Structure formats: C-alpha cells, structure tokens
Image (tube, rainbow, N blue to C red; front, side):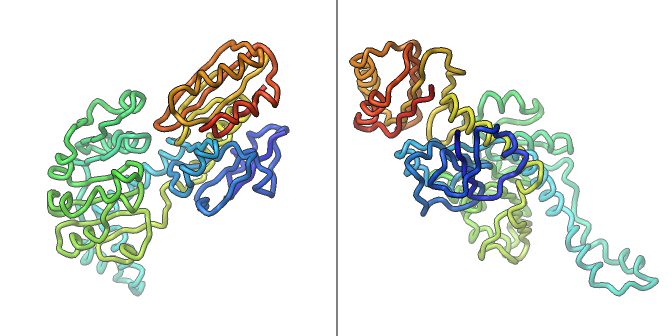
Length: 387
C-alpha cells in the first residue's frame, strides 16, 4: 500500500489513475509521495518515508530543491502538459497588445445605449484600431515545449518567427517548423523583432535577463510578452520604457506591485496553465511518474535527479540509491553487496550535476540489513528496496 498527500487540489482525472493500492492520506507525514501545484514548500518538513514530490506543472520555484535532494527525495515536474494552454495565452496576448480590443470594449460598456450607439462607435473605432500581427517579426527566447508551440502557431498566423535556444532538445528541434529561423545570437531578437516572448526557466543565470541594456536595443513600439516568470524581466526598466514610449506594451501573466495597473501593461492573474485541460494533463503526468518511481524506481522528468529507466524488474530484487556524485561510490555499493553474498544481475548509474542515482537488480531478495549498510555509506541519501 502506498499513501499520497495533495498539498493543493489536484485534478480528479489524474488522481483516478491511482489503483486501489494507493490511498489519499490527510496527513502529510504519512505520505510516500506528495503532489503539489503552487503551494510553497520551503518551510515544510517532509517525513523520512516521503520518497517523491510531483509538481503538477513546470515551474518548481515553490519547492526547496537542494533540501529535497539531500533527503533523497526525487522532485518531478510535468513539462509540456500545460504547453497548449500557455501557448494560447501568448497568442491572445499578442492580439490584445496589437489591437486595443480591451479599450474598445471598456469604452462601449461606459456608453448610454441609445439609437445612435452604432454611429458613436464608428466615430470612436479609429482610436482602438491597432495593427495586424501577420507579417510582423516574432522573437522567441526558449524553444522548449511552450516555445515550440508558440513558434509553430505564429507561423500559421503569417508571422516571421525567430527562435533562440542554445540548449534546444532533439525532440523540440524535430517538432519545430522548418519556416522558423533558429538563430545563435539573442541580440538579433532584441534588435529586429516587433514582438518578443520569453519561455525559459528562472535560474540565477536568467534572472532579470531582459533589462535596460536589452530594452535599449529593441525597436520602438516593441511588445514584450512574459508568460514564464516575472523575475526573468527587470520590470522597473520595462515600466520606464513604457512611460518613455520606447515600448508599446508589456503583457505579463504575473501580477505584482510593479506592473499591476501600470500604464500600457496587460496583466493577467496567472491564467497561463489555468485551464481544465492543462490541469488534467499535468495531474495525469504527475501521477504516472510517481507510480513508475514508487513501484519500479524509474525516474522521468525529475528536476533534481537524473533520468533512469530500468523497466520492470524481472530479477529477484531491485534496490535504488540516491547519492552524491563523487568517486568510489559504486565500488562501495558492490562491496556491501558482495560481502552479503548478493549477486548483481544488472546495474544502472546516472548522474545529474552533483547528484547521482543508482539502480541495482539482484538475483536474490535484499534484506533490510543490506539496505541499512548501504545507507550508512557517507553521502548516501536514500536507499529503497523496490522488490
């Protein structure tokens, strides 16, 4: 029996994927796994038995990754599950920034409804007219699951699309339209594009990556869209550029005191992935990843431990070890197993930065004493007997 705990409401479409041997506990300290959306986990202490946390979404800034990693807790996210919902918001943001649809609607709502309303509307429409996005240049920073979808959709809308991503994955490259210009110099986007949208994770390297210097390179009347993370942009510099007329619009999905109600900003209340379909997709992916990890030890889409897939164990036993990525760890593991007379049938060792994960299939059941001996090795964070 496995127990899971939900820190936020999680779509029933996903939770229904759990079979009968999984139970939803109301006590987090009893959970083998935790599912979370936006709840802040930085001040929470997870139980020793908690082996995994699954974020039903892409961003994991609400999870203390370093602390989880050193506890041997694998943190999953669900990249791409909400990509279509965010893509549609980006396209909507470009359209709303190009033609003052909101301004036109607000003007009409304030009018007295009389017989001449149509004539008055005709007289006013020029101030809301705007421009079309077809034929304009769109620069996309980050060609992950969302960026690729935005790029392909924009091509079909008649835009000239430039994409920048020095770390583009093979899958993303295959899914990218041939009509998109994949460039190696991000400054080309700043200099040449009419619309710029950013789709990269928030890291120390990307924090405020768009600031005064980048804005100074941009074309006059540029539209900047941010549906990734507000801290990717120096928003004070953006507001100055909007006030000076350098930038036409800033469209963001993140309300904060800097941009809320600021002139020439379009701020939505974090709606990017807030669709029924996105929430269902994220929940289903999160649940499937948790089940595969708890039952088989396989890791897919972890942000703190490497991917590892040993399939289903066909031998007598399987154990998994979360540990630091340093020399001599494997030899210590094999010595403990050898001293206990345990024969190794198959072994996989994967690393991700400073941390590593080892999966060992053996030809005889593994005792708790062997697991305890492995756990006693310095820089081993967690040992699990899967079978």
